[in-house]
Image (cartoon, rainbow, N blue to C red; front, side, top):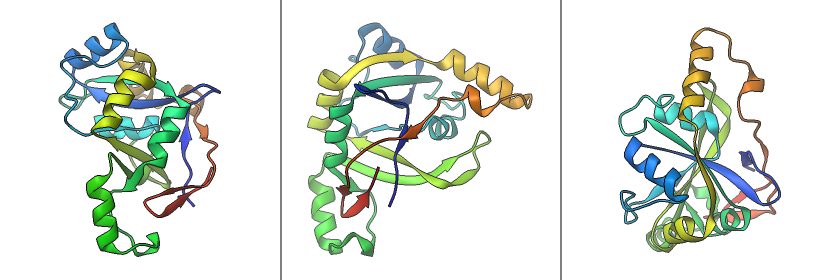
Length: 193
């Protein structure tokens, strides 16, 4: 079973995305994504803080210089999960490769579990979920599910400076805990909370 770890409360769950300054500034101002956000492309949301740090190079990679913490409605996140199809085929899914190909072609949510990362980007035993949204799921995400967007780039840079000086402690990182979900089948793969 794969588990999902995130910062959440009884109403929202936090996901992270990295963007250039223009998209991020517009999103914070509007409280959702605006015209510079490309709705026709698949957009990936990640509940793992350290995974987005790895992916964005602690907000130093080109076009990923701004890190957004996006609080979305939990029922929206649960709907995303219930519509997800795994990005790659595995014989343990209980479906044929052809059936998976049909699902992936029709799905508006892709799911990947990649090794989570430590503060230096080293892979860990635990796996972090990433969810790719497209089509109507992107529209629901933008128009219905976002509750709050916070640009946490300055805080990320502060945490990186602590990391680089050997002073970053686990208590200073977002306190992610196991997200309580019923058994959900994502593309034939059981995910249990």
